[in-house]
Length: 120
Image: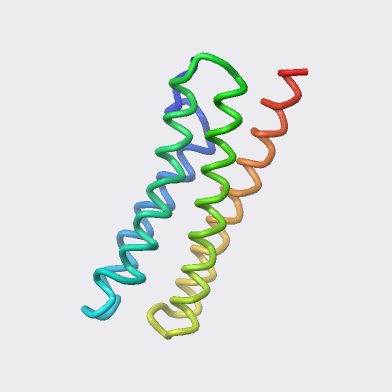
């Protein structure tokens, strides 16, 4: 068990969530329970699963939750693409957030690889 707040990937994922909350404020009202809600839930799931995995006993369980977080990161990435294509966010906003989520994804993959290697 380790403190998730000490992980850089958790910090970056949390910063991404804060950014998502900021951008969905500009979404149309009709998207409040649609795309905005989906993006919010997927993004929050990333740091939440990192935190949950860190609270488990073994590295195997941590690896499982990191994989779930990675799935949520991929889902969030798609919702950003959709928001851009629907003109809900600007190209600049998309680029900033796309860069953030891809950094988180790379960090999750690296950490997951390290955790898997420690189990062998």
